[in-house]
Length: 294
Image (cartoon, rainbow, N blue to C red; front, side, top):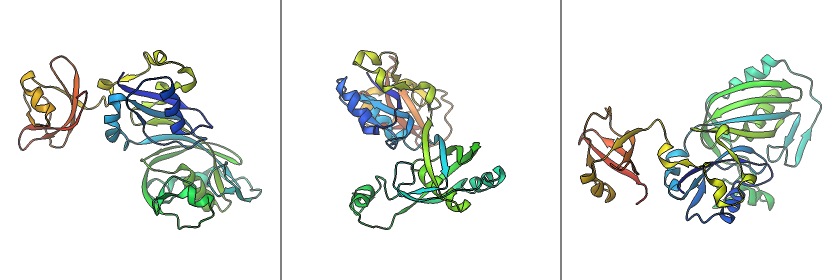
C-alpha cells in the first residue's frame, strides 16, 4: 500500500492522534501527514502511506482553503474559542460592507504575529509550552500570503469566511486581527480545512471508519495519481538503472517540455512510477529529485 489517505479529521483529536490510530490498525513501514490542524479544527488532513512519504516535501507548500467562523466581541489568549477569555463585550451589529472592507486588507503578502499558544519554536521550545509555564516571550512574526478571503455570511456576532492561503497561515491570527481592525476583538470559533492543494474534502474519509487495514482498500489515492498536472514521462529500460543510481538520463521524444527545472513524473516501460525528476534543458536531461519504490 503506497499513496495518500485523505482523512476528515474530527474535532477533539490532534493531527498526530490520526497517525496513532492508523498505526494501530496497520503495518505500514512509513506514515506521515501534511499540514498540522489544531486539535479542534476539522477537515482535510492528507496522510502519506509508505512510499507516499517521499512526496511530502513536494506537496506541503501547496495552497490551502479553509471555512472559518469568527466570533466578534471576544478575545482569548489562544486566539480561538478554546483559550482563556481576556475580554468579552456586547458589540453593536456592523454593516456588512465594513466587514468586507477590512477583510480585503488581508489579501496579498502580509505579516502575521504567531499565536503564543502554537507549536512554533522559540529558543528550541514550542511556544505553547513556554506559555503554559507562564514564561513570556516575544511572539515571532512570519510572512504569509492570503490569496483570497470571502465573506460567506454574517449573523451577528458570527462572521463566516472562506480563506485561501499559503502554508503556515494562522487563521486564528486573522480572527484576532479582524477584531482589532473592527475595534471589538474577535476569536476563532470554528475551523474546517476544505482543500490542500489537489486534495479536497470530497476525497476524505472518516477516521472512525478505518477499523482494520483492509478498510483502506479503495480509499488510498495511488502514487501515480498524485500531482495530476505534472508531466508524465516514460524512461527507456536501458536508462532505468542509471536513473535509480541517481544519474541524469536523456530527454527523448516529443515530451512537450520546454523549460528547465520543471518537475516531471517518471515511469518505466512497465508503467511503474519510479521517480520525480526535474529537467535541465541545457544538457537535455532529466535529473532525479526523489526516487520512488527504490
